[in-house]
Amino acid sequence: MAASLSITGLDAGYGAVRILHDVSLSVHEGETVALLGTNGNGKSTLMKCIMGMVKPTAGSIAATIDGVRHELVGLSTEEIVDLGIAIVPEGRRLFPRLTVTENLLMGAFRKAARPAIDKNLAFCFEVFPRLAERRKQLAGSMSGGEQQMLALGRALMSAPRLLLIDEPSVGLAPLLVARTIDKIKELKESFQLAVLMAEQNFTQAVRIANRGYVIVHGHIEFEGGSVAELSNNELIRKFYMGDV
Amino acid sequence: MRNAYFVLAALAVAVVTFAVARLIDNAYVFFAGYVVLQYIVLATAWNILGGFTGYVNFGTAAFFALGAYTTVVLHKTMPFLPLPAMMLVGGVVSGLIGLGMGYLTLRLRGTFFSIATLAMAVVAQTLITNWNFVGGSRGAYIIRPSDSPIFSGDYIQYLFVVMLALSVISVSLARAIQFSRLGFGFSAIRDDEGAAEASGVPTLKLKLIATALSGGLMGMAGAPLPYYVTYLDPASGFSLSYAVNTIAMPLIGGTATWLGPVIGAILLGTLQQVATVTISSALSLLLVGVLLVTFVIAAPKGIVGWFKK
Image (cartoon, rainbow over all chains, first blue to last red; front, side, top):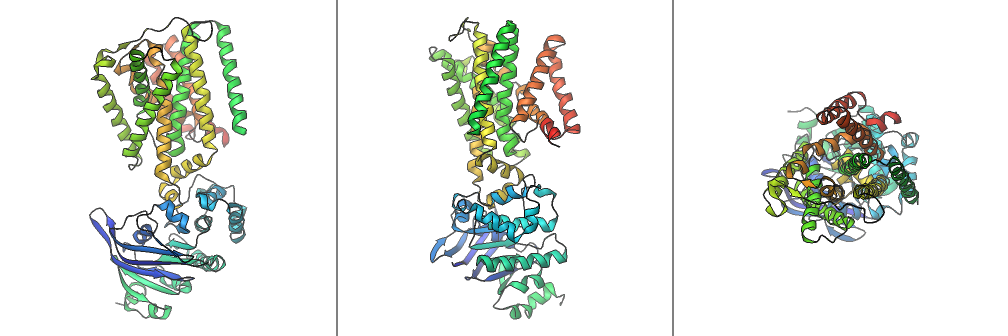
């Protein structure tokens, strides 16, 4: 039960627009790593590169799962999901006209995930009792907090080893942000996941992160080996603490 | 297993329909009924892509007419082929066109995809208009055999039966898809394509299946047309009214299920036939417009959606 991720020298963009420049980053086994940065700095693009939804122009993304190393660049999104990598997309991106159960089942669309579908569904309803109560409700009619829980549940349905979470706090009330972050920690421990979490909300993210990277204009500007290092970093102070 | 029961039930309905039509014993019933059945197939085919997957296709006329023109070619080169075989070829031709169109245009989303399908219809019509072998802009005459080849009766009864069988096939297929993993993937694409992709749904593959199936069924629906009209020209084969009707019918019936297009096609198709005879043929398109506006305002989820509330 071990999964890790290692990105080296990654360049990517959309058409002529360069977004990521020489990004290197790693997530070790059992770690929660925070990818910090304000809007428009390339956090989501990096997530999409890992999932194969944006094709990098240079560099390597390697995932090591149970001791086997896989190069993700060049693989399709389906193949990457099959390896045991799942994403909770920014803004939740549920299927609004499908029910809660159907949304969860959609997370197990891949053949590899199907044998454990009943077990994983039961697990999702156990960790998110609210989803069990609302299993027949349309996802689009739920509150933001419930939707975020559903998005997390959907990603877990493929029984991932490495979980990418893109901005879990977007559009949530502060109390719900805190609850979501706690839930992520709980899930990470019970599933023994390695987690890469992109987040703007520094104070919430560092509550559960082991380490963190600060991304500015598509480049990793700072790598903090601990929460203390991150908190004392001048970039962090500038962006989040209001110091100039 | 539930699918098998459904097919049996659909076949029973088809047999009863044909028996009733025979009892009325009036050729007009078969001529009018054929058109309604043809619209059941077209609306169901359109809904596989437009309703289940959410990609609005304005190019129905192209798939339909290419099926019809395939029959014209086969009629001239291999007149001995039975009609069902010609329909199969027509379906394969339109299905391949659908696959090709899907491959070229499915990176476009929403309105852009729809405009591309409309452009495709115009291109296909221009090509056929300039192809002398199938009659070019003059059109092609096809002499309809006088009697049904498989039972005693007029050839129009045979055309009616063939279209009835195709309706059973397409509706059963659409229903099977709706309750399958494939249909599940289609609805994920309709709701949020990016999220579907991120969940590991092979979106391009599924969309190609949808365009090929949808186009193929439309081509099969068009294949008997030359025998029905006996004179086929590009302007009538590629008529925009096919595209408009096939979009209006599922919208009126409801796009989320297999049943919606069937209800829409029977309702609108019958109404148009009645209006054509009793009032005027020009009025039938007006009817479509009025009903469409009414439903968009009063019941945006169609008749099926209205009852599910």
